[in-house]
Image (tube, rainbow, N blue to C red):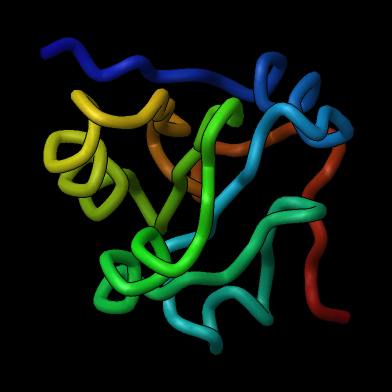
Length: 103
């Protein structure tokens, strides 16, 4: 299975598109510090439960974390069942226009 990586330009196009859900897999403290606008915070260890409790039919899932490791782990686990994309390099590599930082 090939994991689809996306970059800043593609994720910026998806932020305002209801066909996508953007999920930040980091812990709450990291999420509060900086995140992509509109991202839902679902810590890595809670993702299985979140996935089981929500319906993603017809939506594409974009995952990101700190540097990509957690996102790739989830994509490998669920990539055959869901349309998942991973922000290559994680939030540390994101230079798009929707970065929200704590002031």
